[in-house]
Image (cartoon, rainbow, N blue to C red; front, side, top):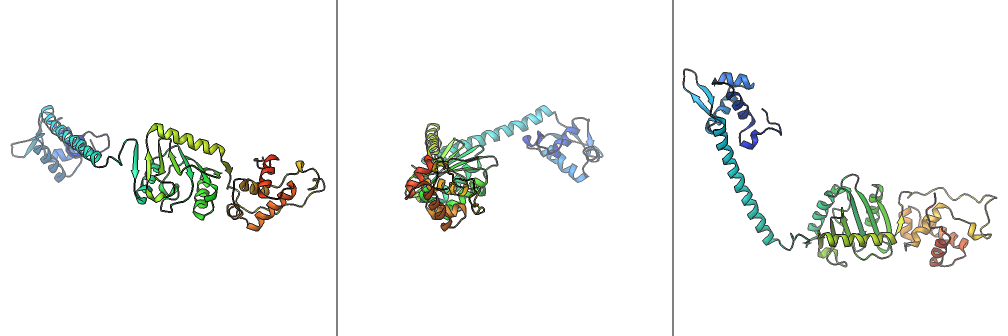
Length: 346
């Protein structure tokens, strides 16, 4: 018998070697130290130490003679007494656990409530967020709106989210202008996540596997603390809120954030800009810019997202306005949507 995880000897309190020696002794009338060492394949001193451990536990008896010999005691009686002592120790340990848990609930009832946890400090929120994220196996739902709290746990991958976890995020357009939110969104989409933008979000929210949700106590002061919701009914309501926001939000792809080649010159067979405006379609870059503009993004933000210059953004918007016969950004976005320019093209 060895010290493998399936060995029963650790449960008795004996080390694996002592267990192997006992298994040998019950198979022979008696044996000296040399015989025991040879049978179990260990040096003599190790065999002697194992025999002394068995003697102290009343599992082996020294037989008098010229050379000291050892014999096993009746296993049922000797091992039964040993297991009874172990069971008593475990019972005392279980009682201690129950007392500790009762004290914990009495002292920490507001934080350890079964339905809602209250987290008061920023470090506490960050640590709990990391724990929840590491325990997520299927899906993370995320509503992100300013003001943001910058800290150590800004990236899902940095805190160990499992591979294969589906991430869906909706960012509030007005807050999607700083480097932190942009880089966080870029990491999420690069890792297979989906991103959408909405002009206004009702609350900051993260839902983990539809089993727990994290949201701030005060929306205008994220440093004031957060709540971890475990109540199935409340989590279900928050998931429904997310899905409602998700359906109304504008999809955004950040996978093509590179300057493409400049638009090619019109071909002879292409219609002139002032012919049939309904038949004219802008190039892919212009459609991307119009799509982001329709979500409420400013030119500087669009330029940062697509990694182009602000002047390039303004040029594409101006050209779209000329094609549509529109003057204002609102008119451009409205007419572009009517013409189907904001729809994804194969």
